[in-house]
Length: 72
Image (cartoon, rainbow, N blue to C red; front, side, top):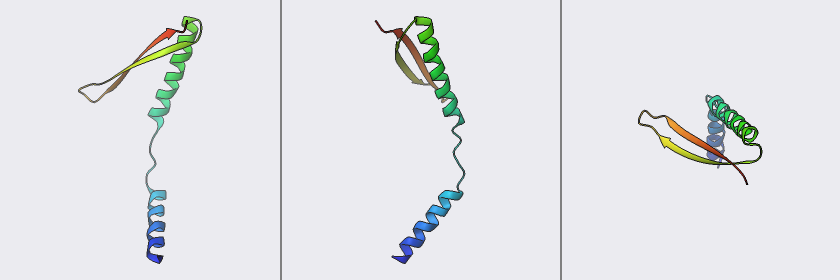
């Protein structure tokens, strides 16, 4: 049981000292999505519905197409 506790402590210390993940690209994409919704609502004059289409390109890029439509 003491060994389990030491293993757990060692694991937690390793996690605490591991490099942190950079989420800046994710946060930028979310901010752009929010702006796109705001712009669509302004341009279409009210609440909108969104439809997405995703695709993985051969070069590894992940493409998301957003189509906004005004709610009737």
